[in-house]
Length: 61
Image (tube, rainbow, N blue to C red; front, side, top):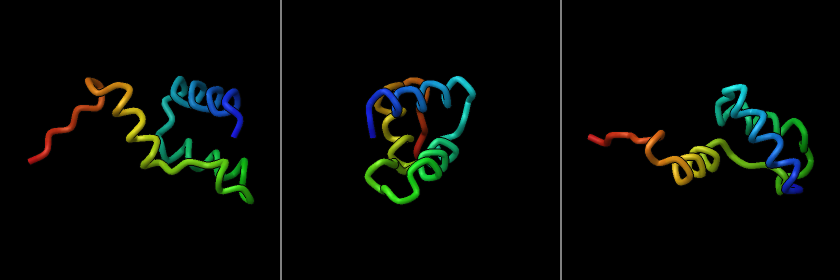
């Protein structure tokens, strides 16, 4: 996936408050025959948590 496409998708999706599942589904629809051009919703959650740990703080019991 080209960086500019990925960056555009993530920025636009986050502004629209899309869930990681919606972003992953959009990428899958855009690249149905190219798994290397997609990312899982789990990867998106992990990336967001790494980038914004204070926003995505989860308490584990």
